[in-house]
Length: 421
Image (tube, rainbow, N blue to C red):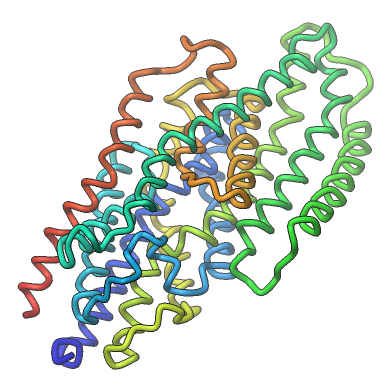
């Protein structure tokens, strides 16, 4: 208690600095997953992709960000473990800084790693350091490790199936342009359906606005149908009845139909990501503020103040704008060659996986989902279409994220503890 009374304002300043640094890392790494396919398929320039993601990430973080500090623990800590307030402050500071350092290192090399797993590793590392191995709920850690496998497989499978459907129904037909006009509204319905569900299940789940699963499905069906009807009318008006001559021109016309659909889906994913993963950066910060404001007493249900959410959203935007292009390049260009139809399948496959996981409790990572979806699209053209060297590097970065973050957090915890005590 004496440490908190003596250094409380300094702890808050450090928490703000480390929290902003962490959200910068989230923007530099995680956000690129949502818009990477748009850049890789040349639907959006890097600049426009950054603007799109920045707007929707910021809105998601500030309007629908995680509401309580308890969410940051992810159920990883043994509920029977009681941390001293000052130890918890040092641990949260160490977790923020270690995660941010790892994300900066990974982003500078274009590695798409999970920011959630970075925080998980850091919290586990400091918990073991201070309270021993029993401080961790290892059943939850098994779920985290399982997600390394489950996430990319589901994302790849759904993206692969979508790509095959477009190939069979449109691209490999005698009249692909005509088939694109015919089947376009069906894919618009799919986009509308998934955009509504991902917004309700992930983007708005932290607000008081709550619908049952049945109500959410009905809303998605209705809005998806309306979108399909409107798109059918617009497609018939904007695309002439006369087909472009030559296979190349027809396929080019097909690609133009899917480009806006991918942008819409990416925007919804960015909003959902901002609302959920901002807690990775501001959750530990709020924990520290709550302990100090409570005179050493920690309330795990303390609300995250609006100013912290705004700071988190700002940090995400800054990180995306300064270093996000490196991960965008890896996800959008380096794994496999993308076109608008392929990018659409990758984005829709990722969004569908997130919707599925949000209501089934599957332990998934948005980063791993996005990468898996891009791989699935590449697999539709054969394994030779995938750069296995790039994929190997990404997988290694996934495996080392948790232990590296944990080790860094342990070292930083001891340094902070020695500095202030």
